Amino acid sequence: MKLSVIQNANLHDKLVLVRVDHNVVENGVIHDPYRIDATFQTLFYIASHGGKLILMTHIGRPKNKKDGSITISDKTSVLPIVEYLYNKLNLKFKVPDFYVNEPYGIQDIDTSINSLIKELKSGTIDGIYLPNTRWFRGEEDKGEWKDRFAKELAGLADIYVNDAFGSWQPHVSTFTITKYLPSYVGLLLQKEINNLDKIFSPAKPMIAVIAGAKFDTKINSLKALTEKVDYLMLGGVILNAYLAAKYNILINGIDDDNLSLAKDFVDFVNNNYPNKIIEPRFIVESDTMDGKIDGHHKVVDINTLKAGDKLNYVLDVAPESFSEPSLINIFNNAKTFFVNAVMGFAPYFNDGTIALNNLINSNAEAMKLYAGGDTLQELKRLLPGVYMKALDDPKYYMFTGGGAVLNAIEENSPFGMEPVKALLVE
Image 1 (cartoon, helix red, strand yellow):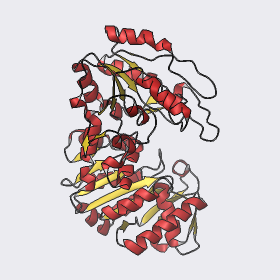
Image 2 (tube, helix red, strand yellow):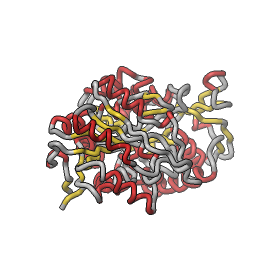
Image 3 (cartoon, helix red, strand yellow):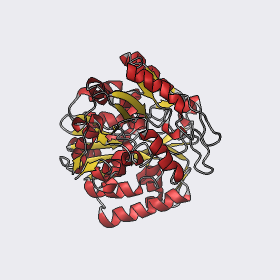
Image 4 (cartoon, helix red, strand yellow):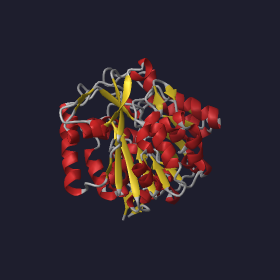
């Protein structure tokens, strides 16, 4: 497979539309700028080769899937990113102000942007940063608005560059746009694809640790991952659903859909890979979701559970699980880790996540691959020393998109993701 890479583009004096994944704003605040910083190499490359930058990213989920309405607010604005770029790099970006046709967001890129393009060409500003792509009616549309938005985006620039590994869904700004502009792969996206080889051709044994809130978003990638790895450990709600399905127990917060899919996964594992799942022996049961504050929580040994038992909320893997000799032996002998997991219910149930990452970090020889916004954010919050080490340690690599890695695994190829597939050349 060969990609159309940015190194082959003539960028001099060109308007370059760059799709980045700067989806790091939560309620108007940037908690971890890692995904912004990771794109600097591409932005510098474009600027140093004479290109003029027009950036775009999505932030959050402002669209209501039921009625199609789009909520535009400061909580999902790109302005914090623009401020960060100015404070970090002294780069001046301006955001165009387009007309909002409520309740469907921004319908069109209108001529009001022309004055900013003149400023960009003259060098008065360093770049244009478009509003949140999901504020536009066409971004996630499947009909006429899709191509309309793609053509309007194409009208802004001479070249399109995709540097948004984490934005793997085929929306207008990641996929449809490639039909209308010469399109290239940015330096970050190239690096991410290359590092996927460490998952597809890992040093063995390999352990994957995956957590999440719903089985329906992960069932296919979990099955594909189980086939590839030597061991798989679960966390979060999907661990609870797995335990409920396997041991025929009741756990608060597990709905019928999650339980049904968990039973399907348990059958899949039992019939094909019975020795691959690492089950934590000790879990934390809480009377309430705030059990860490009021003290109403306890450690439960799953070996004591019987069919029909009922647990309240299971909100963490107890750190005692990571002191089990059999688990320590498996982790100490691993050569590759892939982690897309927060083990406990943040922000209070942190012990499982801390114990997991400390044990992984103690294996100095293994390659440690991390992915997912919450995964990296909690690693930085709970173990800042490990996080800072990971930024420069060649034994660590932090992907800018957890869902993207799982999608590539599900597709059985880094080139299976639709936005990447659109950038392949003969």
